[in-house]
Image (cartoon, rainbow, N blue to C red):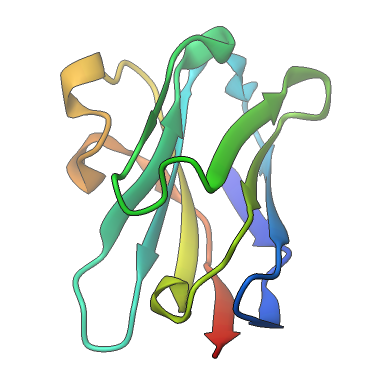
Length: 125
């Protein structure tokens, strides 16, 4: 299984960006998919997750109301739409896939088996 993240870039505060994560090697529809991020000198932290077959989403409090996670099963791709970006959103964003992830564990990076290579998002004030 391989995950390919794309869509990062450098933007101004208040702008929007959309990240994509293409999954190959296995149908992702039955996987819980998530986005994590790691800022400079920080631990990797949970951003958003979407349950298998499109059921149920979860967000970190810091992005709730600004970010939206979605999936396109036909394209085997997961998206993260990021609006009203802030400088503190600056990080490398990673997509992750996990099969058999229980709902209570979906915010934990340890629940995911496969990771993409990361895409840099830089937000300047």
